[in-house]
Image (cartoon, rainbow, N blue to C red; front, side, top):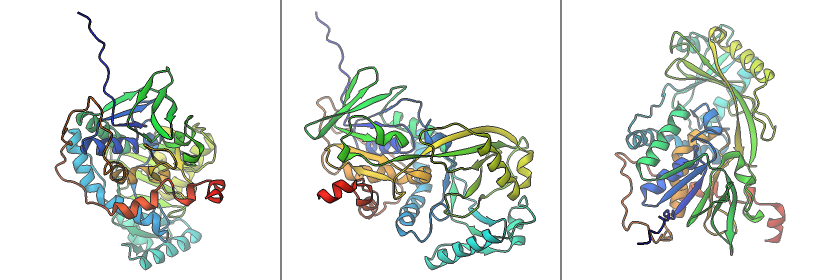
Length: 421
């Protein structure tokens, strides 16, 4: 008897990238009954997700008078508590959030003026913030320097540990029946007759799929084989940060501290973890794909951080790391269908908000992809039920939000293409 080799099933969706963009997409599609494979050249979350500080900060991370960023960020934050609960249940381990809020603080007169304007704008938009005298801020966080010039409290903001979130997402994807193929470099996209067919791997293997989602962070826009008309202009923006550790455990500060200008690319932050670690970040550098940690970066971060919290200099330098923020020209992510290529999708360009937007990325892309019937694989199980979630996050207005992040929006299209249209 001749034994035929087993042919691996063809996935409905192939996701390129196993970080905080690709894994939420995979999990949401699995919940809706799709067969999903995720490929990545590294272990899950080893790109920008590994370096992220984890702030869930739609107010302090974005300019509050930018309505598009603010709407997207507030919708993402509203989903996070239920999203974390559902993700923890699916992964079999809790996903915790730090809900102590944030303080935007001023170290000198110039920064005091900046945070005053920040508070005024927040008030005009009806955002929940409170001006604090230096003495009141130091009562909340006694480790702050006595030279503090003022503060604004943002009680609604939270934080998560991105590495723990990635681990939970990977476990949940596997538990829901998804396939994770790590250590697998994608060499190029396969396109035929105006539609994607899959990807070719570095070893020459071709993976076929009904749809392909490009969620490879700062490398998404450089993948060979993507037609020029479909490309999203994603550039890497380097960020160096430090992970400090207090051997005595947590408690030096409880809240996320923002300084140097809320919503500013030059702003700094200190993010506490539950285990006595503190993330001090981050630089903003246009250095291409360079990820080296420099003495200059370490020096500047420690100098600025110690000016705000002198006790930081007593902590252990636990880790120095640099990552690449995937950034589009208008700073908003690109989540949705590619221009001019059928069955090709984007989930990239999250810039400084990859953790925050993780709660939205999957549902925004899935709502665009799933309503048209997925192409049925010949070997796909009929009626496969979606993975259950104990509490679904609140449903956002996905139509309005998808318009903000549509990869075909004018801000992302080449000028030549715009003139041709």
